[in-house]
Length: 156
Image 1 (cartoon, one colour):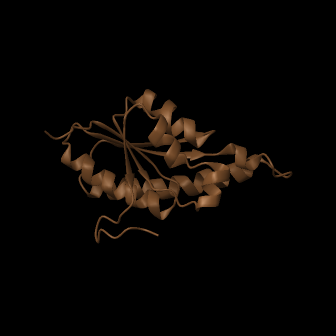
Image 2: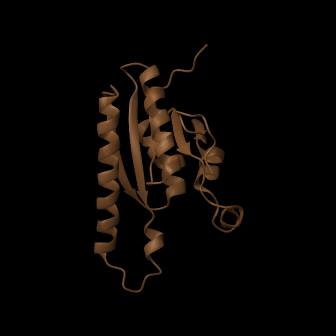
Image 3: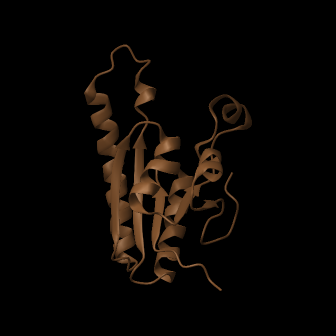
């Protein structure tokens, strides 16, 4: 029996891992039929700006504009692949809780497809991995994408 997913959430942050997750999410969405919805999510971690003494809204605006351009490219690619139900959002706050709890509850997400962490062991120890947190805390299925869809090679 195949699991049917109707509401698929893909966090994207501009990384290669997120791009791989997006590509696989398009394939999964297509397999789940016309009723399946794909939602792309970018979270601006505003805490990252708190330590900058010259913090102003123009920095956040620039980050959001860059994210929006990249997401719109993803939306176009998904539509070209035949995905009809695709939308995106840009949120502000702590990525871990927004990705694992808040947005999935709002969207009634039944699958989160997330790229494997790009952090090394020391960074994971000090900062914690968003991917690790999502896999432990989400109330829906989570698929961690580690390989390229085309050549099935693990990403370094």
